[in-house]
Amino acid sequence: MHECDRKQSDIVVIQGDTYQKNVSIEGVFLESIESVYFSCGKLNLEKELYYDESINKFVLLLTSEETKNLKPIVTDFDITVKIIGKVITGLYRGKFIVAEKNNRVEAY
Image 1 (spheres, rainbow, N blue to C red):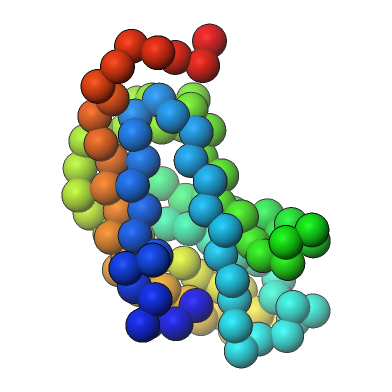
Image 2 (image 1 turned 135 degrees about the vertical axis):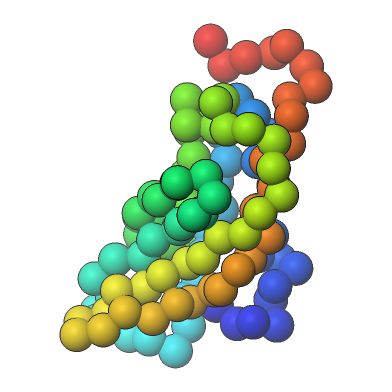
């Protein structure tokens, strides 16, 4: 991830909706990446991203179950990459918005 991609890195989640974001990790050999994490301290939320070989990217997936109880907020998040022998911050303080759901349509 590059800092110049900050606007594209913003996350807007609607309460109760599933959210998916594809994340590219550049400048690091894929074989050396042990794991990639999304974290939001104010919401006490941490989630490991999974690697999707079909698109060659890591994927952040927040299910509707995970987002339905999040309170509306504007805060920040980090993407952290664990590489063999060290940890690096891939994105620092990206904007994370949880928006209130305006309709009553639910997944179940």
